[in-house]
Structures are given as structure tokens and as C-alpha cells.
Amino acid sequence: MAGKNLSLITKGFFKENPTFVLVLGMCPTLATTTSAINGLEMGLATLFVLVLSNIVISLISPVVPDKVHIPAYIVVIATFVTVLQLVMQAYTPGAYKTLGLFIPLIVVNCIILGRAEAFACKHGWWESALDGIGIGLGFTATLTVIGIVREILGSGSVFGWKFISGDGILAFVMAPGAFMVLGYLLVLFNKIAKK
Amino acid sequence: MAAKSNITGMALCLFLVCLVCGGVLGAVYTVTKQPIEDAAAAEALAAISEVLPEGGEISSVQQAGGMEYYTSTSGDEVKAYAVKSTAGGFGGPITIMVGVLPDGSIWNTRVLSHSETPGLGAKCTTDEAFISQWKGYNGSFTVKKDGGDVDAITASTITSRAYAKALAQASALVHSLEGADADAASGASVKKEEE
Image 1 (spheres, rainbow over the protein chains, first blue to last red):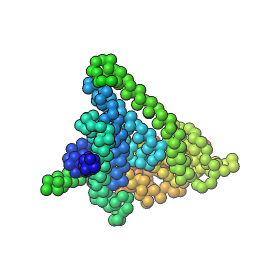
Image 2: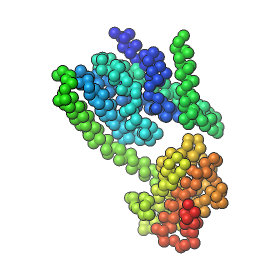
Image 3: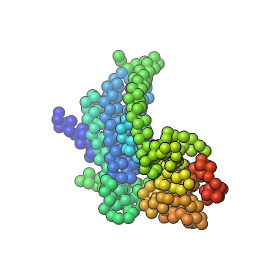
Image 4: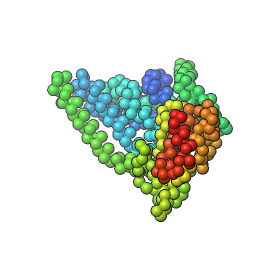
């Protein structure tokens, strides 16, 4: 049982890594990873919504008629996103300001509805919570890695700690750099994973 | 309760989901309302006190010429104004809190919000040479490229123009509030006509 629980969590990092293997949730991945800290915050925000929505959806799915399960799940997810938004606005206004628009967009993040449909509605709440933690942590780790790479190349710093004077390669802070870094990391990840 | 896919079952299910979610949101909103207001007020106050000379009592928000402003008074004398001024930049509106002395000269500035390009226009919040030139500034509010005396940020003339315009508006507002003589105001008003 313990091994199964552990594998539910670790699969989010490797076997079912949401970014590199499932290739879901590309919008926040590309947009918010301009620096390591932004990637980390976005990942944690998604983790929060993912775990709670997975738990609630696994609990309500037996009583929700099939034809309306998507609207019901969307309402649940949107509720948690709005809760997160209000709480962040109140207690971490700085983080809320940098992530801004991308917090409400968590509602349409395919990872969350994807996990609800593929996992939470067929499993118990405990397994669904672990699944949410695993996938959420995998997403957080991935976003942070992309953020670190982009911050090093684009600004010459890591987590805000600057190690070069002057500017980095500007393109990596902007959208083209996001695609490039994501592409190369995806290749690298899959090459290592195949071995 | 079994999942029924008839109209009544579906409607009832969605109704209950929405009812519970609405209740949760209402509760969270009530709890976070005060902290959100406090955070916003603290941020505004921090911006205001940063752009004004130290000491002096900061008034509550006032309106004039379509802009919000605050005054800093000691005794009955108005020592400085903090004007919230907005101008269209390269990526969208730039909102700046501008500290203006009664003679229309700039005391200090701070960008409240902007959507300029990272690494280019966004430097208007970090470029020391650009920001420090405003302290005590009272000139034409025109960038050198347009024949004025403002050093623009490299490769970000449009952002610099918008910045100067926002400051010119703030300065002009203070002139009209102070009812200053036409000569001193000419710099700002000429600039406005050029736009």
C-alpha cells in the first residue's frame, strides 16, 4: 500500500509528468516561467487547486449524472480558483500581482480537468488527493526548472540572485525563449526517460 | 442517491453544486474582504509616501481633471502633491504615482502598473539613470529624440515618452490646482498640445 501511494506521487515527476509527458497546461507553462520564482508560485497555485478539486470531485462523482459532470466539475474547479485568488490577493499581494491574469486562467488549465476526468472520478478521495499532490508537485518542479533556465539565460540570475552585471539574452524572457526552452527540455527529458 | 440522467436529476445536481460553491465563495469573500482592502490601501500609501518629501500629513484621495491625487500638508500649507497619472505606453497604459511640489517640479516617481516589454520598456521601473533624472525635474517633459531634455531608456523611446507625458500631466494638474502663472506652466501645456 505504501509503495502504491508513493508511486501515485512520483509518477507526476516522471511517468506522467504533466508538462513533458502529458504535455498539458502549456499556457501557464509558457507564460509564467519568466523567472524561477514565478514558475514556482504558479506551480504551487496549481497544486492547491488540483489537490482540492481532485478530492471534492472524487467525492461527488458517484452522485453527479453523467450528462452534467463537466459543468459540475468546472463549477467546483472555478470555486477553488476564486478562493485561491481572493486568498492570494489578501495575504500575498506581491505574488498575486506578478501572476495576475494567470490565476483565473487556472480554471481552464487542462491538467486539472484532465485529472478530474481521467483519475478523480474513478478513484477514492485519498488516492485522488495523492494523485493531485503528485501531478501538482511534478508541475511545480517542471515550471521551476523552466523558470530557472529562462532566468539564467534571460536575466543572468537565479531566484533573483544576480551573478552577471548587465543584461542577459532578452529573447529568453519573452515568448520565443519560452518555446525554445520548453522544446529543448522536452527533448532532453524524453531522451533521458527512454533509457 | 443514484446518478440519474433525467432532467430533474441533472438540474437538482447542478443546483446543489452551485448552491454549495456559492456559499463557500460568499464565506471566503467575507473573510478576505478586509485584508484585501488593507493590502491595497497599504500599497497605495507606500507608493504615496515614497514619492513625497518626508513629514507632512497625507490627505485622503481627491479628484481633479480626471486624475486622483493626494496632498501632503504641514499646518495649513500644502507641501506637495502625489498625483496618480496614466499615459499610453508601448504595451498598454502606464500608471505612475508622481510626487509634485507646488511649483510643478517633480519630487519623485514610482510606477504603479505597466505592461511594457520585459527587458526593454519594463526598465522604466529599474533603470537608475532614467528614474533619477526626474528628481527635481522641471523641464520640457520631452525626450531628446523629440528635441527635449529627457534621456530616454535605450530602445524604449515610446515608453519614455509615455512616462514623460504622465509626469507632464501630473505637473500640469498641480499648476492648475495652484493657479500658477502661465509662464511656469507653459512647458507642460506646450507638450500637451504636441501630442
